[in-house]
Image (cartoon, rainbow, N blue to C red):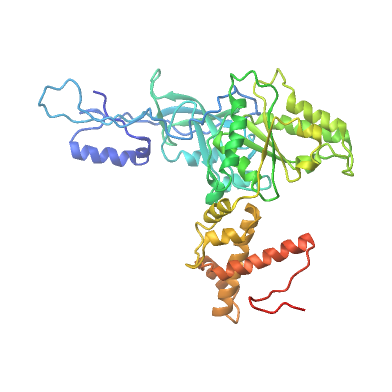
Length: 490
């Protein structure tokens, strides 16, 4: 009978668990009379990552670091070799500590693979971690001073760092184990370069439920369409598919195109490399052509990766926007449709646009798939409002169903603006009622931190403000307010 194995969640308190079982059973966890060998190997982070060399392509299945593998499980029983009726003592089979851990930096567009992350790795492994060969290690950087020092002017949000376990050496030569424990006291860590790999999805620190969900309210159907179109191109055996997997995603401004693409990448464990097509437009056709080729080359360095071309309609147009640039269009079609024999895994491309009619015909036909985001229905708006207000204190009289009916034609961006305006209206209402003399900056900060409920009247004020803003943007004349029963005759 095999001895029981500690589940991965129990390794954080391994020493306390061992001492408790010793006291309860009166025997050592390593067997009666056995003593744990002294481990004196120090932690030696060495070697920064080298140049970004493309690794062997991986299957797009979820990375092994995304969830604990079920290979290590709890199994209970008595020791074999004992006579029937003889009192037994169960033993705890602890995964051995690793002598050396060799990891590679996973290339990602969210950070530089040439940076030095030794201290971040050291802090991560101050706690014993269970690792297996081929695992993807995800380390968040939120609030990490070491990362800020290296990348103070190179990032907008705190990214997650990804490392792939390349090799593990046990304490005993030839020792085989499903997994190894790694910490700063017993293991030497070597950062030996960079590689390409799929990565597990991980929501950003403090992100809202709507943005971190793999099935966002009101956009789940669009995410399914994107995944269905991209997934066949991730299959290494799909040699019948030629060219890059490409999708033209259109929808009104603020409809959630970028959100849907991010969620699809998370579902398929892909990197996302975003490029604004306005930044690709050069002073001449040759300059624009070169920038487009560089964007595709950079995306290939992060494979498996989705290259997001934002506002694709600006590519292929003359500088005055009236005619078409045949040279740029020809280059873009070649990159989207032709297969390079030297590239074992072509990149995936998604072009987004708010003006599908402005996309040149030759550019539009170069995309293999088209997905459209329509204005959300009343039910979809109710689901979006429910997700956006999940952590917001609402008054008892607030009805999301009624609010969804009053926001016909609103898209996701408009609903976000509605909540922002209604929160400000609620703050102004409470300040006017409770603090007519005004607030100091410190008191106002404490007041906002404490929170306040948003009432139906606050949503009404916000709706009036948004309707006025939309009317002014459209150039419509403003109609004065009137009450029911009022005589409107001239």
